[in-house]
Image (cartoon, rainbow, N blue to C red; front, side, top):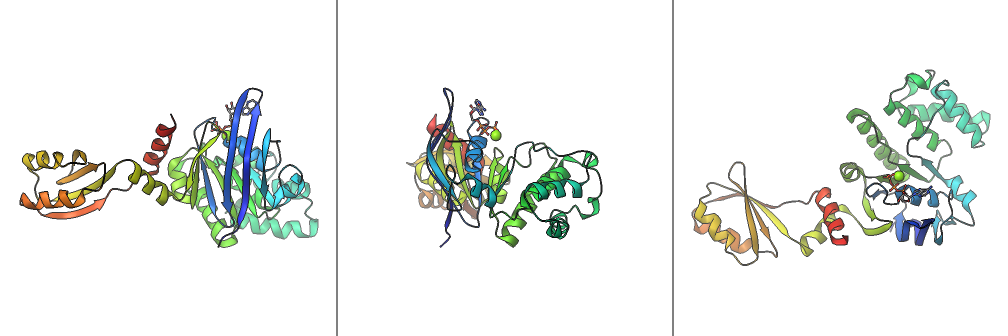
Length: 313
Ligand SMILES: Nc1ncnc2c1ncn2[C@@H]1O[C@H](COP(=O)(O)OP(=O)(O)OP(=O)(O)O)[C@@H](O)[C@H]1O
Ligand SMILES: [Mg+2]
């Protein structure tokens, strides 16, 4: 059984009258990549800052690696690292010099620093650029340097706040692959904040959806998807040998079928309130058409996301 590594209890933060985070209860397990998904202003950055002990909650609390974020914030910062949104670098220093400086700030002895920096440059794919000034770096390279900076103190947990914002597809993929690799090879627990559905779907084991400071769902993508299917509608995709309009009319008349959509290559998408797959396939067969393919249409994270939002609205 995985152990909880982050637990929040009614975690709340107001900025004046603005409620940024609202009674957040969340558990993240050791060794997972947890996606914290929400639109602009949802409270992601505020949550990360509280979990790093960098801003004090208005009420509620949390533990990170077993340490209380308020009373033991120094210990929290020792075992957790954060890559802030739009992190800055010393542009006129080289990658190695940037890392060396961050290493000094983190009290890593000089004797260890060089070896550690070599390993990190290697891990983030910047060995070739070690002695190049950061001003020459692409955004993607800078972001990978930022990740190396987070890792210099060998954290157990890394918070990445929108790490691929402003990166091109190649840079995005590199950062994403790097996160997966750090998690797999080094068991690093990653808390990834993002408003990008695809990113979270590609990298994360579990997802929390936050909106207006409140957690509206937290589960695996698979389970979130199932919930939506059970509570709302179900869609089955069919590929048939032929589709006649009287078939469509008859399918639409089945109790529980809400509507039918036609797709390319004799595909049909049957939308249902409850599972009517048996009646639907019997009707198709009765009309002399052969079912070449029949599968539940997976809900994309986008659909899930919108659904959870609609429910709240
Ligand atoms: N320092 C601050 N002072 C006042 N209000 C703030 C401050 N920081 C954040 N807020 C407000 O708190 C709410 C949550 O902001 P937060 O930055 O945590 O959201 P976010 O999910 O990180 O958004 P984004 O996707 O834009 O980064 C917003 O309404 C924001 O305007
Ligand atoms: Mg933010």
